[in-house]
Image (cartoon, rainbow, N blue to C red):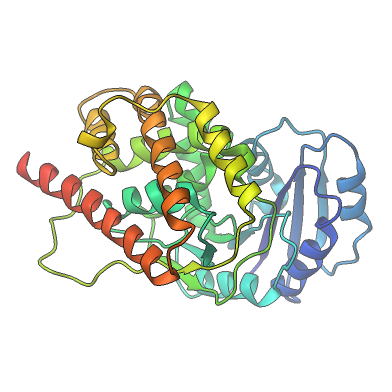
Length: 351
């Protein structure tokens, strides 16, 4: 079975070689290919990729238009991947790449999954989009994926083909989102129509570049895709009872100055909405989901939700500083359950 890997990169000269080596080890001895889809400011990342010794054939794609989705899709369309039965996608900013993680993702797709994705535990001050919005929204489709935006995943040939077909049918504004950080949610939610998903539990956090500096871009590119693809699907019935959703929140001490900088940054990104206390999280997210379901464009709904989301993250960072890991996990699980129940109950009432 031919395997391939796509490594999207931007200014990852310090980490690209180690990630390439780990991916090459995971791909094994059969016919394999690794495509580096690069949009760096200098040629150093591409040069380091080309200089890394591998068993797999290497295909460097340099000078691509910046955008995670643009880069991944450019690589996915390459003829070298046309006959690959399983394709791994791996983040290239990872400082502790583990070939056993990549191999597990590949093996689960070979065993029949349409998509396999890594489930890393996350530090409490990270994963703000995943924990507060992406995971509970995706759960409304019947797929509770702990780390749906993990960045390290593998797809079957059929799932990748479905992605390439589906992206061509998107409205322009959503296609632009998928060209950026919206690609992660798009890959996962498109694959759900093809076959089973596998979430691979990893016991240690991934060490990588922080995403907080890119929060506005990540939000405005990922959330419209999340809202569109979850709100346009028929949710499953509300399950009777059921187990509480588990969140793994790893502790680390955050230097007070850094935490204050994060809070100041959030404050500078937008004004908190009036009446927030009367409509606390996750009700604004539920309202945005229903707005899209009623015909409001997902990009518009995401823009309206933005200040509410900023307030949610600010509240989380403020209250979470002194909470225990168990308390943090409980806060997230409670909000998840409220959003999930509100969406599914209202959707069921409209049937």
